Structure formats: structure tokens, C-alpha cells
Image (cartoon, rainbow over all chains, first blue to last red; front, side):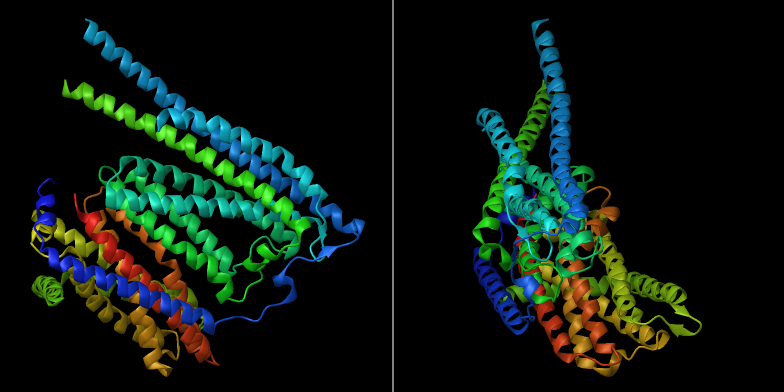
Length: 112
Length: 223
Length: 227
């Protein structure tokens, strides 16, 4: 596959500029089209989408069913983070053990 | 990079631990939201998880570009780490979202634009990891191309709520939040970002050790 | 610039000549697309009537499936006798080679889509040709978006193992947005009360996607294909 580099190098340098200009033009057109589309498509907003409004007092029947959900969300975040770190630690342990093993064998062979 | 990386991880991990342990106290003290009540507090984990995922995807895109155009092996290792970290945070977002939705909307899942795009992003990242796993030799360059495409998809995800009518709260909610809602949000936001960096550092370390192992094997074969 | 177009045209002509000898790609892809639509019609036509709103989705799924088949096959052909390496070794701009391959695929998919669209309109009693220009714009822009990413990916995958599985695995998630836009745009066109403003929005979005994806593909083709 080394010869492919030759192919890349022997291209006429001038054509690169034309392509780069074409690419820039494409990006500009794309962004302009995007802005135009976004402008044309502002959906009507409802009050609930525009922001959170604080509630002064909480009816007790509202709190109860939501609490487990909030706790579950917090627990899920913890579980995923800790679980992922654990798999990382295990994978790192395997690789480092192999690394030490290979290094030891090289040392033995060179010593012998 | 390697020794710095090794020292970086405990600092970042400790810092994110601090943020995560203290976050519930601050979140419990925050006021209740008028229409959604207590369940709105999931927002403090849900939104930062997505932001951390965006950060990781951003790192993935930049690192992929660096690898593709500058041929830096370190950038390739960072790209793999970023892709895996992004999948992890995406998983958090995808699980905490329905927990909020079942209370706020009455259904676990809704095919609105934002959710659809979130799932697509997660799919793209998993496809990236599949390619790295099963692509074999030479797939790193190709994976870098996919990484750039994944980053290009993010703006579409972010503006999608502005284009489609949707039941998801608009993204513009965040800067205009009252201070009482804002402090816990930015607190857990900081926690997630630091956690993201910690996971990145740990994952890059794994990739560096793998590269070291490969180099060692190559050296053995050459003798 | 002229040189760029000339190279692209040479690649297209080469592909057309190869294809005109065997017609393998054309016949297999068209046959696959037809059987795809037929399989869907067994699933979605009940008691002589098509399930409401199925036509737009089936049209696009058939295009995406047969497009993937054609993409895989078009580059599989370049593997024989290291043809792709020869192509890349030519003293020509790499992006021009990409554009040539893309144009050849677009020609093939245009034939497939013409047949599939007529079949879907026929089998699902869908008024697909009520707004022919808008339908054409949707199909053309959607296919360009799908094929521009697909051409890049399948070119890159030529050297990888398990490429047959990896092409759809990588291609579908990244082109789902294009498919959503195509399906939604077609759906508002063939609805009992067509919403032309929405159709225009979807066409605009598809154009936006195409511009970004095509630019990125042209940008990354060179470094990705250099070994």
C-alpha cells in the first residue's frame, strides 16, 4: 500500500485549490440554506416550553409517586458511571498484566 | 502525556465524586417546578448528561479530524476514548429521560424530534465502536471519517427542537432559568463535565497501554 | 475545474461501459427493489386496501435497501485485480474520482427509483404523482444525501474485512435523518390534504443536509483513501 502515497503526491497542485474553493462554497451555501430553513420554520411556542415556573407549595399527593423516579435517575447515573469505571479498571488490569508478562519474557530471553 | 494522564485521573475522579455527592443536597433544596413538581428534578441529571455527551462527541470530532489530516496517533486514541465516553453519557440520558417522561408526559417514550435524534446519535456512536472492534486493520482512518460525520450531526440534533413542534422543553429554557433552578443545574453540570474528563483520561490510559503492548510485540517479532 | 469534471466524467464513462457489458448491477438492483416492494405489499395491503400512510415509508425503504446493495456491489467490483488502487494511483484529483463514482450510482438509483415509485403508486393506490416536481426534488435530494455518504463509506470499507455487514451498520444511522426527511416530505405530498408549506420545509432541510454531507465527504475522501 506504500505506493499509494506516490499517487497522492504526484497530483497537480493547482487542482487542489479549485477543490478547496468548491468545498468552501458548498459549506456557505449549506449554511445559508440552513439559516433560511430555520427562519421559515419557527413553530409557535407554548408556555410550558418557554421556561420552568417555580411552584410555591407542593400538594403532597404530587410528591409521592415522583420521588422513586428521581431517586432512580440519580441511582442510574451512579450505577452507569461506577460500572463503566469498573470495566475500564478490569480491561486496564488485563492489558497491564500482559504487558508485564511480555516484558518479563523479553528480559529472560535477553538475559539467557 | 502518560505520566500526566496518570496523575490527572485521581484529581478529576475525586472532583467529580465531590460534585456528585453534594449534588443531591443542593437539588433537594431547589424549588419545585409549578407544572411538573418533584419529577422536574430529574432535569438536573438529564440535561448535564446530554451536555457531557456533546462534549465527548465534540472531542471525538476534533480528534478524528486531527488524526485524519495530521496523522497524530495520540488523537486516534483520544477519539476511541471519546466515542466510548459519549456512549456512556448517552446511555445515562436515554435512561433518565423516560423516567422523567413517564411522569411529565404520561408515557415512557415519545417519538418527538429530539428523542429521535438522540437515539440516532447513540446509534452512530455504537456503529463507530462496532467498526473499531470488527473493522480489522486500516479501519482507524475510516473510523476517523465516521467521527467527523458524528460531530456534524450534532448541530442538527440541537436545532431540531426549533424546527419541529415538539413536547420536549425547548433548549432555550436553560439560560433563562431563575437562579434557584440555575445553581443546582450548573452544580451537577460541573460534576458531569469533570466526570466526562475523568472517564476520558482513564480510557485514553487504557488505549496507551494497549499501544505500548503492540509496540512490545512488534519489537519481539523484529528480533 | 475543467480537469476535475473531465476526470469525474471519465470515471462515470468507465463505470457505464463496464455496466453495459454485463448489466449485472442494473438487473440485480432493480430486481431486488421490485421484490422489496412486493414483500412490503404482502405485509401492508390487507383486504385489498393499503394501510394508510404506508406508501411513503415503503418507497424510501425500498430505495435505501436497494441503494445499499448497489453501493456494496459497485465497490466490490473495484476490488478485482486491485482496480481501485489503479484508479487511486492515476494522476487525478481524488475528489473527482469520488464524484465520478457518486454520479454513476445516482444514475443507477434514478432508474431504480423510477420503477419503484410507479410500483408503489400502483400497488398502494398512492397519489404519488400529484406533485411530480416536488416528488422529484425530494427523491433527487434524498438520494444525493444517501448516496454521497454511502459512496464515501463503501469506498473506505473496500479494504476492511466484514465490509458487507459494516456498510449498512455505518450507513443507516448516519443517513436516518435524510430518510426521515424524505419519508415525511413524501407523506405530506400524498396525504388527502397535501401540506405544501411543510413539503417545501422538508425539501429545504434535505438541501441543507446534502450540502453539509457532500462537502464533508469531498473533504474526507482524500485523506481517508490515502494509505
